[in-house]
Amino acid sequence: MSQKLNHLDYYRLPWNYADNGISWLEPTTKCNLKCKGCYRDTASLGHKSLDEVRNDLETFKRLRKSDCMSIAGGDPLVYPHIVELVAMVKEMGWKPIINTNGIALTPELLGRLKDAGAFGFTFHIDTSQRRPGINAATEADLNETRLKYARMLADAGGLSCSFNATISENTLDQVPSMVKWAAVHADIVHTMVFILFRSPELTGNFTFYANGQKIDIDTYEETEWGGSRALMAPDVVEKIREADPVYEPCAYLNGTANPDSLKWLLANRIVQEGDSLGYVTPRFIEAVQVFKHLFTGTYLAYGSPGSMARGRLSAFAGAVLDGGMRKILARFLKKPARLLKPAYLQSIMIIQPVNFEPDGRQDMCDSCPDITVHNGKLLWSCRLEEVKKYGAFVQTVPAERN
Ligand code: SF4
Image (tube, rainbow, N blue to C red; front, side):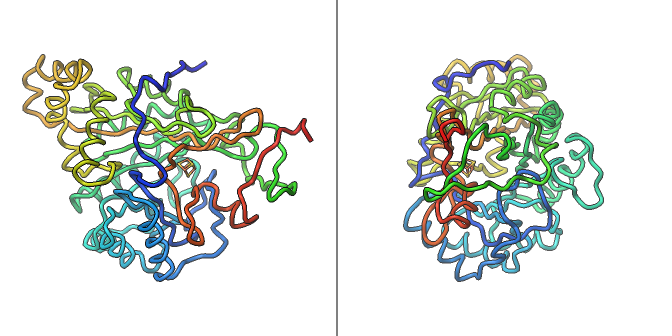
């Protein structure tokens, strides 16, 4: 049984529906890979025109502030106007983050995306995929692939580099290998995100309704990879601590049904030569969010590579805030040689998508950062297919009530 975490120990990120760190743009549903747990119907609709995407961006401009715009899909690199789109996102005032599996990325395309204003990439790489030419039995087998992309970005220079991995009951034990790998490459890997696998089979015993009518929910073709239970954030915390015993989260987003569920759980560590010197405290992250918003008008989600390389400065600056940050500074001062070597900030995020309460309520991420636009309205990107298919979100009722 995983150790209970108390959300009140952490800083509740100030992100909300109208003013968030991130927004989520989908120019295409097409993809060149099939990942288990993908919530997008990649066979429908296909590419939007640039005018349609501009309309989506204008909807965001009217309804919601955010620092970054995640450009997702489908895979945005198969979108034929991706370079023009990145330039448009930048010109309209967001930091463009490209969420991709990376397969279509070449150094030449990377150069054009960077010139167009790309701020960073989030690569989705895990064993839920069958990547062409790669035979990976475990997540550790994919670290070489992750490193290839991190180096590509580092060679291009000045780009933020994040990795997403979907985690199921069957791959949970492989989390420590990714956490250790990320520490070794903290100079070029800025963020690791663990997203917990969800599938209709793991919801519990519910009947589904849309617009008052009972419906049959599609099931994924293959569920063996996903295991037999829905993981929760504390399951992953336990595994991260196996690799990094000093791991401590600093901030979270709660659930819409449960104030104490940890839907987004953020930790930021200071890493030097592959060792964690400590994790920044809730007060530190609060100061970062408040000052960023005060001076720029938006909350921070992705730091630049330059800011992530300021591990030593963060320890000094944070030491005025609280004892937790002073402990990190003390580790530097204990071995003064450490002060001469670079140290890096690195984020570790856990995302726990929808959970179903026994009474049928759906616990979504309160203040969802991955809100997208559909027909001029803001919607959860993970539930978009329901609206496309039924014109409404699906409701769940405990099966015994029927
Ligand atoms: S509500 Fe859905 S789309 Fe929004 S952050 Fe949570 S999992 Fe992502």
